Image 1 (spheres, rainbow, N blue to C red):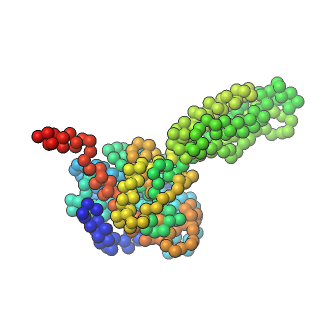
Image 2: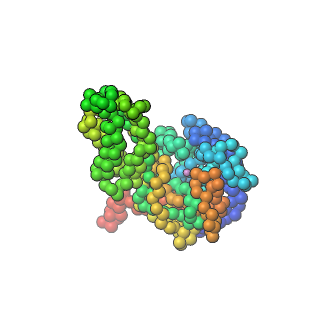
Image 3: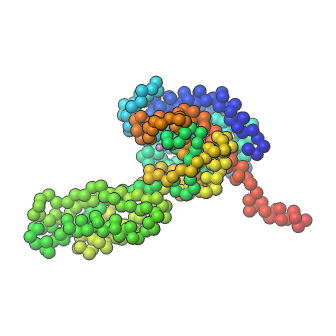
Length: 414
Ligand code: NI
């Protein structure tokens, strides 16, 4: 990269530090902590960063760490790892199994944390040698699974002054050494909607004297998803699906209230922003047609992660440089949620999938399962990839921009 032997520098770094990083990951794996309770994890991260001469700061709630490497002019690039575990029992028979009953790093966040730590140590060396052309903000984010940790980081000013942000997630369907990339949306949104309807109840012999609430609720349950599907671009895959409905207690009495709950899933950011108002308007029109009152409680989940195209190119360039020419492969948008999407609502960036499967293996332990584990050589691959991504983004960010052009024009005139 830029005439430098980045690959060789990474090889040397990892030859000395890879075992230590694997030990660090196993320690986190044995001591998993749930969202916003990652105190031990936070302490371990801060200790390692401090020992490397960096100055980490812990987020106001006491979990999660932000730390900056480098100084001076140049762009600021952020790298983010999530640090929390899941309320899932560990079912693996390994020496580093979880020691906390019912809690496990079943989503690989221990691996993400270790990769970012390794990347931090490498970048600290680069900065010391005067080789870092800007600043790298390291974000060890708490509570991705809640979700909400990204909002906590943002409320603490964690991405202010950041030009571009990158993150990754373990992918057990990809071999170690491969990274899955996609421009545009790569994860989905999932919100919860709860509807309460009310109106005069009475005897089923005289529905005309009541709001006939069960009938009205049934209309809402069927009309709302149908009408919604005709109001948005079908490519957004906005779908309202009911999971719970409750009204009445006996066959011959019309109740005076009822409730329906469901989820709203969406692949597209624009449709996601429009969804609550659209659903509310449709609900009011169906409810008024049947003479019932309807109230809606809409709980936002995470937005889809929408990858910026230029940032994805940087990820691809980095992967090619340090993992091999064919290391970057296309990946698909998943219906899962990831709170990295909150950052990308404010600044450009991209999220990648990191291969964690042993090449040749046919075993598939998916994330969020108690059997999930990774091929630990993914840690070294992840460090190479993240370090190269940060350096690529810093160098690209320094390329002559519009601001530099007038000066060149002036030189020509002279
Ligand atoms: Ni995860």
